[in-house]
Image (cartoon, rainbow, N blue to C red; front, side, top):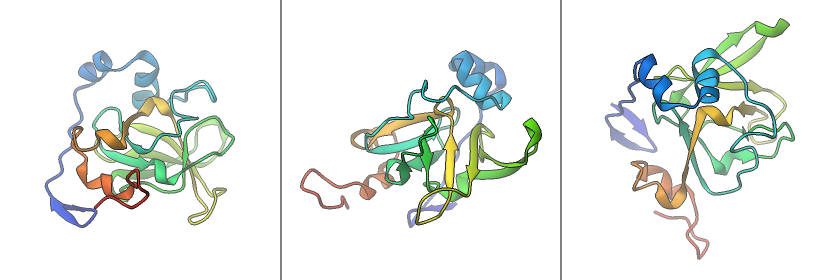
Length: 164
């Protein structure tokens, strides 16, 4: 049992076989999530997405980031100040390309998401720089239908009040 937004529920995000993942994803999505690739800046699906909703792991569906925490970093990739559910985001040391960085991966899918840097805005000072290819966006109006009703309350209804 894991606590997600104060509710106890059984959460199971199973990683499909590599063969299933390859059939399900585009070649770029597979390269990024399974082979630690990076997509081009400013030429990806979500770098300039301004809709309200959450971003989940494209492979497993783990809830990773929210539009509430998304900001314009000027880098050409979606950037967030914090994870939506910290338990689903794993940090690893990445010493590739002649530098040492903190890589961001999903917990159950072990998908490569991107990297985190300490040059972000308040309140965390962090910039989670994430590849769109590793994410699937769920608009706020589709959260219940997609199986993520617990995250709907962070968004305002059309009258401006938070949804309960």
